[in-house]
Length: 171
Image (tube, rainbow, N blue to C red):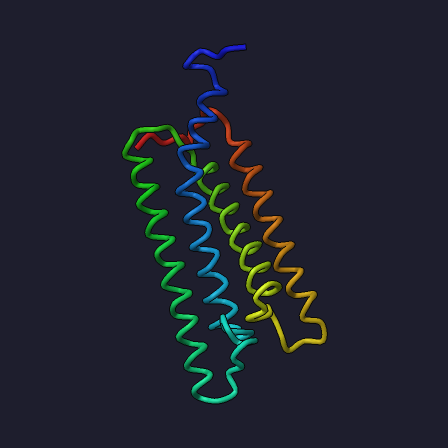
């Protein structure tokens, strides 16, 4: 079955594709910011390399803070790249909705949690989510479950956005 250029299905597909890349980049970067700011700085549960280099003295603490800074610089670059990609999408006049954008951003955050959780917590073992608890593995698994929920929820939100609505923007 073929669709005319004005049928809703191709519009949804074009809209989803146009926001997928910027949304995922923004979600990856902002998810990293939430992790770094909330877990590393505010709650001080861990640093990026705290399992590998415990911050038990000033030298190790400085190494951890430097690693956290490099991590934040990387997440900042992801956000800048996501904003540039979003700007390009908006300026191109391609149709988009806030639901699609937020959905892809949530999916990107979920991907961040899943990759960071699997790679840093389990494969490289450079830190745990909350190492000084009775069951640090439960916190690591919770982080992965949150990532999976964000990924699926974001994908469903992006997919369910209506083909045309009052929230549609064209730049």
